Length: 379
Image (cartoon, rainbow, N blue to C red):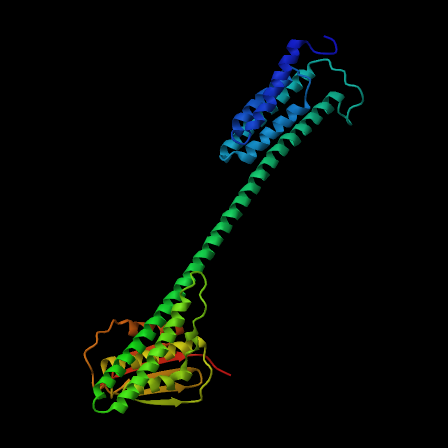
């Protein structure tokens, strides 16, 4: 046949090599069919004794590897590779049988007690075990790594979604808190201004000086209301980040100012502080102030001016108690319909502090609001 193979043999060899390598272009989209085609072509190369081993071995290794790395159905991947390895093992045994029945001249000594033919067969077994085991292991490792990366990316997206959800939830809670502050501010200031305007109108003809004082108090109340509402609404403008509202500066230290405003509206208020005052957390400070503000507003709305009211603030070692009582004997104006949000808001404020709230009528007449908050042992 000479140095070069005959044209027919050359065409057959080229065709089988093409059948071995070209299907690898589809190894990721159809790994199982590619493995089947490459495996059959590999057997043909061996049976037809095509003088090429390097490219075909690399192609079969890649086909086995890609089934392990890309086949989504793991059961089918294991079965397909198992069938191929078993088939190749049977073919190897057939090759050994052929070699043992032929006169093959192996030069050189064997390995220990093994004859040259036995040493050759043992070498082939070890090479094939490492070959197929390596292709199988590397494919499984690639699949596991890709799965782990996908799982990590999925968990990262989940974490980002949860963080975004938590941020939106925090913004919603903050807006609800500001809405509650807005309700308390509006209820107090508008009720106060209504009473002051009514008082000024009542004495406008008989006592111009007192009417002037009421109008001045009304002007001061309106300015305070506008300032507080501006601060609260300004906080709501930013869609993403909410700055702490300026109303956080309101606290128990301003109770005397609150009492003075109530007196200007016509209530007969006495303020009493018992015990040694100490610093309390800002949220406790603000919520107790709002409870006092809401209570005095309710007295104005339901009992009217001239009602005797008592604001009692008591400090003990670890508890702050705020109590607002009235005798219910004022001059009630037209019946005002409440929305029920005031008492609900007071209860929510106390619940956030882990305290207790008692609201109800007094024996005889009047009303009492008593709030207790434990703030811990202070320095």
